[in-house]
Length: 84
Image 1: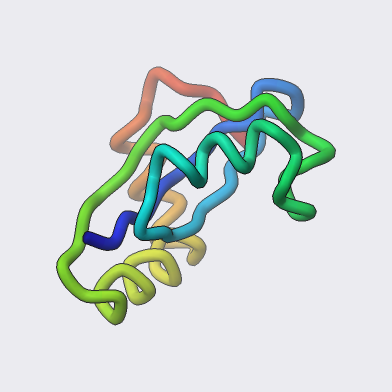
Image 2 (image 1 turned 60 degrees about the vertical axis):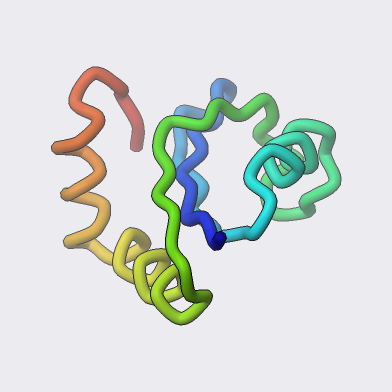
């Protein structure tokens, strides 16, 4: 399985969107500072994820969620969460 995930920085209230084959391990890596892109803004909370059978589909979804339309979709899905 391939997972597209959305993390919310508890410190900055910003989102990080990525994809992985091991969601649990990736979240641990983000929160332990092993990812340079997210290290300054730890801790993170997993707020959304989707599973895909192919890496191509997961990557396409990741790219979409990082777009303006994708971010609007996330805001509709997660109305209760405030983020920038």
